[in-house]
Amino acid sequence: MIEAAGLTKRYGKTLAVNDLSFSVAAGEVTGFLGPNGAGKSTTMRMILGLDNPTSGQVRIGGKLYRELKDPLRTVGALLDAKWVHPNRSARAHLRWMAKSNRIAESRVDEVLETVGLTSVAGKRAGGFSLGMSQRLGIAAALLGDPEVLLFDEPVNGLDPEGILWIRKFMHRLADEGRTVFVSSHLLSEMALTASHLVVIGKGQLISQSSTEDFVARAAENTVKVRSPQLPALRTALTQASAQVTDADRALVVSGLDSDKIGEIAAANQIVLHELSPQTGSLEQAFMQITGDSVEYHTGLEAEAAEVVTAAP
Amino acid sequence: MTLLAVERIKLFTTRSPWWCALAALAVVIGFAAIISGAAPAGELTEVSLTQFGYGFGMAVIMVLAALSVTTEYRFSTIRTTFQAVPNRTAALLAKTGVVAILSLVVGEVAAFGAWGLASVMRPEDLALDTAAEWTSVAGVGVVFALASVIAIAVGILIRHSAGAISLVLIYALAVENLIQLIPKIGKDIYEWMPFRVADRFLTGSGPARAEAPLSQAGSLAYFAGFALVLLVISLVVANKRDA
Image (cartoon, rainbow over all chains, first blue to last red):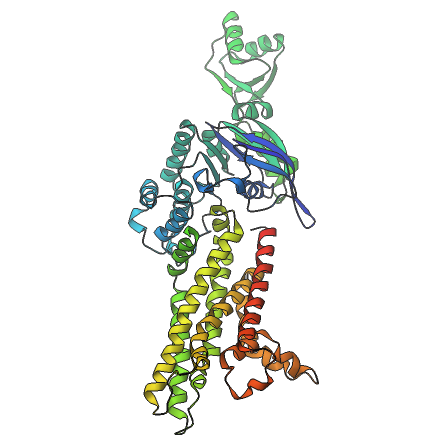
């Protein structure tokens, strides 16, 4: 539903986005990952026709954004919750947006109800907390009941209940067949929310795959085994040509899956106290894959490296 | 048409347009009161003198107009606007239209209010008899409307509230007068400066009529043309640049 082809954006001397091509399908939640300064927000602005690409184009359902009639009814977006006039009430903000796209005014109250802002609808938006502003932004995105939704850091400022709500909400939207494109830094949240990932770094595409594949590709998949007969187990496993490392009263095995290890142990009459596959975390995968593409390094590189190699 | 309604909602759901409109009314009518009170008996015979304070009211209106655009840039609601209405020209023209209509209304109310107050306070004949007298009063609204168009164009180009307001106020209140100080050619340039020409349009019946390079109608066309050119430039820039 969203197709980007060769998107490039140059601001003066900085190349923010460099020949980026990806596609986002309908019916699933696609995550947009990347370190700070990777070009995520710029890309999203280009999708909405706010920034003009230096070259390349991005189409929504085959059309450029400016070719859409009543675009809010096709694409709903929350890019920044602060893009509201502080002296205007929440309801007035949604009213003018609805009117501009011939959306019924009753829809304003509907979306306010959906995000839980009905009680403060008449209050000026400048007095809202971060969470309330975020909800207002989500309400604005939903206003036209669009089939494509873009969210830039939607959980920013939401409490745990809010985060759970928006995760379920995005899943429901995707299940309804809509296209949901979410960018976020919260990797743990992304792992739970997105089924597909588009990962960029320094303005370029790094990977485009399902979340599982991304994690599997990057992080080592190992199995942790505990047994009262560790030395015997180690011998048996090494003979089966697995790599075995000692960890704190356990063995970390790579090269064999847990099924095989269980069978080997049974064949050698070795009791197992723990046999748990350790799948890499999204955080590890992310750090590893985007390690070179981080735009703004802090002095914490050593600690970042620790995250990658830490046994979970 | 829908876009005009949209801009109307936007304009009237914030506080500053209300305050600016009130201020403009107060300034113009207030000045008329001062003049009516202070001029010696028998000297307030020119209707156009009741509009003495229009220039200051116009400055306030220009601030209102510039702000209507610059606050959109400041709070990034211009991005929301262009997201909702990708046809940027239509969106900006609708905004210009609504602000211009408001300026027209405020100008007319202020001018007739000032004239009315003066007529009541002074015994001299200030009745609107001639076409020229009507122009000097009713024309204020038109000048306000065109001035607001200029201010919006400046707002779109500069985007920065403080910068746009400073430029608009200093220009409207001081710069054109100061041009006269340029040796030799100052006075000639001055006669062709847009706000000077707008003043000619309003006070064409005044004693300085003989020196005006353009007729009253010509002056209005010149001022309108200037506003239009500036608006077109600002629309082209707004379309080309990133939101």
